[in-house]
Image (cartoon, rainbow, N blue to C red):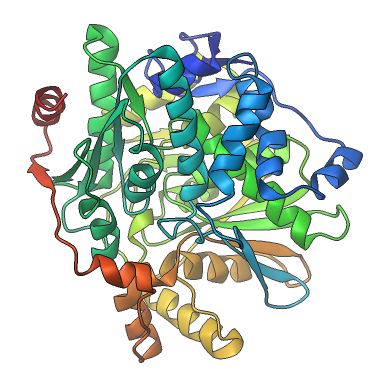
Length: 460
């Protein structure tokens, strides 16, 4: 399998190169040259597999040529047989048309565990084999940081630097990172928002691509393995809910677009997905795009669903490359975005993309109302991000269309919002309660690339 950049210059990279680079040398994101497309008989076979074997079958084409099949199968088994417990994914049936796929049974109670546990084990295998050291950097709006730390930091060959916006993640999200006791992990609070953190990561990649000072890799969803690992639960959820292979919609709360893009790739691989419903909070840049074809960056606002408090959605670049199939066009669009804060793809191109997607947004007030409504009616407690998805899905899809709502995090990570929505005291899960007593350690920097670069180099 070969990969090329969305910006058209960095081409024909093998999986191992993509894994260890993260961001392409021309500033773009890597995408595979081709996809395996499943027919109906193959999909029926996949339904018989447990999660570890499904992960192997669905993702083995992406790593072909770099990891032997028997070794990769062991990596998948190691990833999914213990860290996620016996459930792996539980599915709640609301009625004959509505289902919730609970993606929060991993070690950090968030959907990002599925890809980041896999990424950590692949890194460990490759780094041991290559006898290399790696510096991993990442930005988090809440869940990526802890999932990356729990998934990737166990390798002695890795040092990790995770940026988070100071005061803009929940207490539990922060403590999942800052109480993790490992000398090769550096948690850094940035005086800025998530988009600032994400830009610092990309800027350091661009600097390092020119100077080659360290082996640098990414854990954000700019890393293809993040997308690869998330494709699997689309297949798993669809094959558990659908008795036939009739189309099912997926409703995805998203800010950085990685989770939704994984659904898009799943559909292109032959999974009979109807529409992917993009669900936004008040930071509605994606919803506005799907209405207008214009990507216009505005100031990030704090919300009750902080993991979606994002304005620049990194993975959207991959979708645009799929639309245009020309790196030069994508590169020009993102230059415009960087200079003027906006670009417009035009009505015809928007209609092409809208064949796959619907989009909607939800206010904080309606988020709390949805949490209460679902608890009262079904005795299910949603985290605020999933509540956004459920409400938007109900608004955007006809009642007679089957859909799966992706529950992206456990409600225990956002108990202040849950308790104020329900007017009751919901208790923390035991593992999260234990975090509150642990001592934190993190660093603080200004929103300057010089400060970030200096910190990383000094601690390498």
